[in-house]
Amino acid sequence: MANADTDTKNAAKQEQEQEQEQQQLYTSRVVLTTYPSQLGIDPIPLSWGASSAEERGPVVVSRQKDSFGRRNAIGAGGGSYCIYRALAVAIGALTPSHRPDFRLTEPTHSIGPFPAWSDPEKIVSMDPWGHAIVDHFSEQLDQGIDIRPTIAITQAHMKLAEIDDAIDKGILRCDGDVVTKSGELKVVKVASEPVWHLPGVAKRFGINEATLRRALFEDTGGMYPELITRPDLKVFLPPIGGLTVYIFGNPAHIPDPTKRLTMRVHDECNGSDVFGSDICTCKPYLIYSIEECAREAQNGGVGVVVYFRKEGRALGEVTKYLVYNARKRQEGGDTAANYFKRTEFVAGVKDMRFQALMPDILHWLGVKRIDRFISMSNMKYEAIVGSGIEIVERVSIPEERMPADSKVEIEAKIADGYFTSGEVPTEEDLKTTKGRNWDEIAH
Image 1: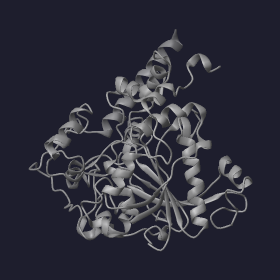
Image 2: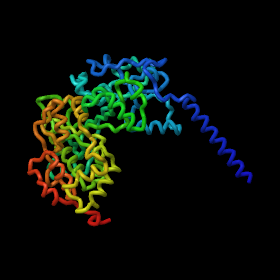
Image 3: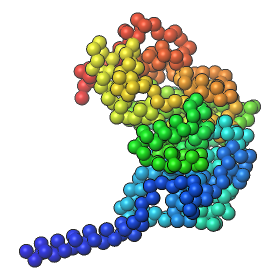
Image 4: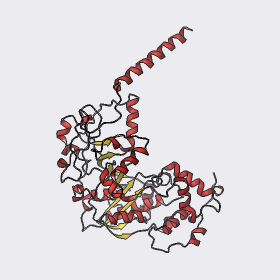
């Protein structure tokens, strides 16, 4: 009985200590939102599309004491990972006042600046100066303003079993420059988190800024009230996934008109890219593009793969799997004719990637011309060409690279407008192009 009393007292004491710790995290006053004329609110000037980083100003979203009143953007840093940071603070693993030490974090390679960096029409969904805050905003950092990078540039080696196969087949050679003697790919990597200039994003989609702000506020459960209360703040860091750029060869060759550029813009497909699901062409197309990018670099040009976090056409993996089930169970089986219908029945729309913002990263890289575009997507092609970048050649996935169960997807997409160097399937072709049903897949 005594032990039980002791345990109860210890538990009560521990609970009391946790409450005290939590009370120290935040004041008793909850700040739901701020207003432009509120006392202590004095945003650092931010002029999107200015001719230099210093004239443009830093992007500041921090709510730390020295930065709260000087914030000039809505949201939180880290993209979709901002929620994990909040959780780390809540459980005491991270102090909310932590300030990063940026020593030794500088980019491994220099990229830009290019004219597009100061063109408010060309870049609206990322901060072109997001990798160089120490270089350009050291004065504000010294003043205690909490500014965080939204871009990082590094280098690495890639080791892939598929590349070993390509070397064995003679598709790639170990030149020691692009492909090491042990079969590893040398690559420069760029990670970027989303930074939206709301007026520019609204213009891209042909809507007004007020409608965009209202939709972002309402359809996220009111996550960021300042979308409504702070019309003076024109920049928003949305809690969504970013992108990664993989550069094969010299990054300085990307804007060089005398060098050939091979490129793929790839949207995330975890089931295929990582785990090899054979219901789509995503991984085979990705591997093929990596091979072609490396070959281009070996031939004196440069290759670029841009990898966006837009799982399941930005519908999400749960929705994608629900659609898989519906496709396989529908009357008549999984046919190309009903490929998009199943998605629309579940999600209400067949695709939410909306490629209007996608070309921004290409302009950030200095791309003017793509000699070989490893993609069949009409949406990506139209967005890139519409932004002023020339595409010389479009490259389909080779027939022999397509998994058997992926024919439904690719035939449906070709009929819907995807590029092909072959014949466009007829309505009758779509009806007869059929994938496996669940009872044909042994487990």
